[in-house]
Length: 353
Image (spheres, rainbow, N blue to C red):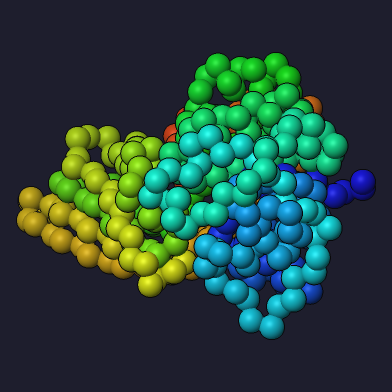
């Protein structure tokens, strides 16, 4: 296998589309633009190779992964003039469980097939890292894949806001089996949570008191349709990611809206009510627009490689530094600048996790 990183893709949605397109892009682009690390611990971004994929939509199941990423209802930004080569990976039928609630049923064409044995599929493919991207609120489905990764001895990245890595019992089991974990809920490469945290940190460093702040996110992909209908876990991870930095009570609230014709384009609005010197009121109102799924993929490629480094070193359980830097709700919240320093130490091998 050499330095290849064998990846299991769980959920062939927009995030998977952005990731697979990006891997094809960097196969022909030698530069570092758009990457936090072209090389990480000796692994190039192009060393990541999908070897197995799972979904439940009949327009994706049974097709090559390179074709399935463009099937409806996906609406991810399509890189111009890029040909994504056949992956040689046929998308397998996964368990539906709670992954297709009524509000998504009109957009998802569930394949009339029985689910495969996930553990067997992971073992047969030689998957080393499992990247979970099932819809928010799919608690049963997410935990099935997490347990399957544990049973197959593959590292697990909790890319959505089901609190799996934060579950002490699950993390303890992964530690005992030397299965690395990163999670929960990926922070975007340049998204609402990381910018909100940076703004909060700036206020604290400048002596500005935060009275109230909210973050409103809206887009037109299936993730946002899902968030509007069952976004409790996402609200929790986003709120706590900001609240954890503020050493006093402040009114913090994230919210979501679905705007169908925005597709995968996401707008985030940040609003602050503040006080500066002598309690004088200050207001800050800012806005960000991004292609949502590429923001996920930019983090995923580094998280995948950190998992492989942990496997190489025989380290299991929650990877503290990687989880704190890459995830909204890690087992231990750490300020981003400190987490980045810890992550650098982990990559160099001077920190165990």
